Amino acid sequence: MKIVIVEDDSLVRENLKILLGGERDIEIAGAYSSAEEALPVLKEISPDIILVDIGLPKMSGIELIRESKSLLPDVEIMAFTVFEDKDTVFAALKAGATGYILKGATPRELVEALHNLYEGGSPMSPRIARAIIIDLQDANDEQYLLSAREKEILSDVEKGLSYKEIAVRLNISPSTVHSHIKKIYRKLHAKSRKEAFLKARRKGIL
Image (cartoon, rainbow, N blue to C red; front, side):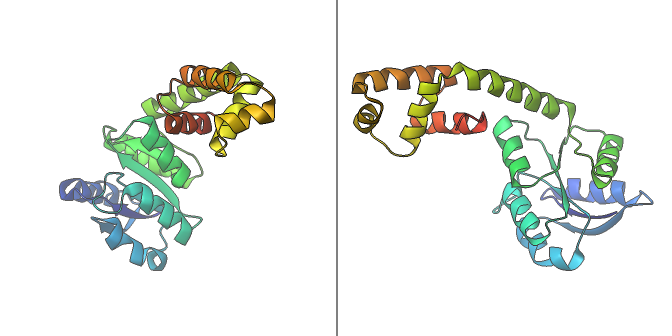
């Protein structure tokens, strides 16, 4: 398999080149310190896998993943990072990453994950897989926590309707709309309108 490494830490990058280059079925087709260095040559190299650090300087790893998938729709992308918060994980996966391995993984775990990815799997560090499962379970629960009316009101607010316009449309009072909104925020554990929209989208409510 032909692999491109994008990692800004020179020591980590060199260690990856030594580790992966020592595998008889892996070819290191390029190793770059930034997205800006890697992007112009990706199409010419046409790698099977891109191993991407998320915390890159300037253009982020997530942006690189998105741009790489645009250039090479069939390329497999492995995020290799210290970031394990759900927002970063989901952003990387939505951008096009098909694997997500934390930098605490052993060398053998990383090599096996790359083989798994090349063979059509979606390898993830156990902590990442568990976080995704928990988030999906929570999403399923919270989707049903909102009533049909609350979902309708939240959708109207997202569309830009005022409380008064929503009240007229639903034939209820503005104060009732406001009461529904407060309940929605509480159920979604959101402190602002923006956060409510973000959590509702992530949980499949909007």
